[in-house]
Length: 337
Image 1 (cartoon, one colour):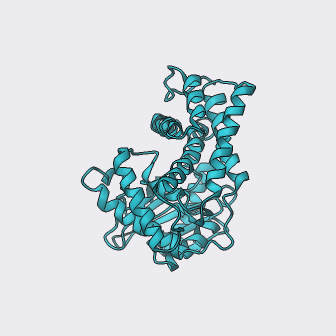
Image 2 (image 1 turned 120 degrees about the horizontal axis):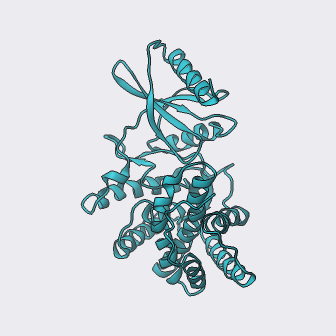
Image 3 (image 1 turned 90 degrees about the vertical axis):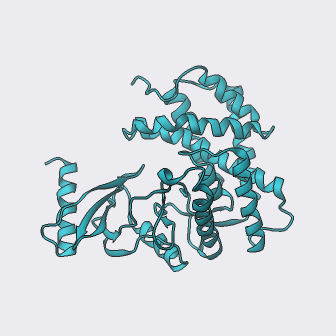
């Protein structure tokens, strides 16, 4: 057997032993952008999930620890029934298949985002950041540098000149200064429509939280409302953002002096940091990890980057640079090896 078959056999053997169901079968439930995968089985007609998180590639311990923090704060995360962290197998609650993305439309958005923003506020108010990694300048820089390396160089074959690097570095510095102005809170880091599920009780279910950090208060808000997988018109987004700012004020998580314009700049530039990273990340997932499907989402993320940067004069040159360097190319097309 090859390593993939070995892992599949080990996963099934573990699941059968853990559940006492020697005829148990599992089928793929989902996979994410990491090495982690999820498998659905049934015990007495009730679904359960086997999470496969190979420790040498995706240590499951942070998932368990962060999940406990979230559960203790009243968030709806999958209950862990059995965990073998050494092998990287966990038997967890099945939150279902109704992710936000296919459920969202003009008629459902206010209600679904209302639930999601309730959950976000609960996270920011009640989940401790003690011991979590800091979303600091070094981390932010590392993430943003994925874009020139993987989008420009690997995907488009572009080598930046010295003056162009100055534009990139000036934009990165401005973004990081804006992030540094903000109060910090628990940061899920991937709080968006593919990681939220509509559930019959305590909706939404929240998943994929293992990368949580201590970070700027607008990060998860931007991740949710400037989602890489779905777009809403600016007026609607601005309404949601302002309503959330007022809730943060009421919760004393924000100083009164943070007005609408300042909070919107925080939201915009923090989201810009994330989307710059994603432009490179989706390309890296294609070329390094063999997942070319992510290139189909690049145009949406690129539009976020260009539109957001051009709303703020101090980072607008970055938009001009990226657009010029891309030219008329279809960025969804895989480049030659």
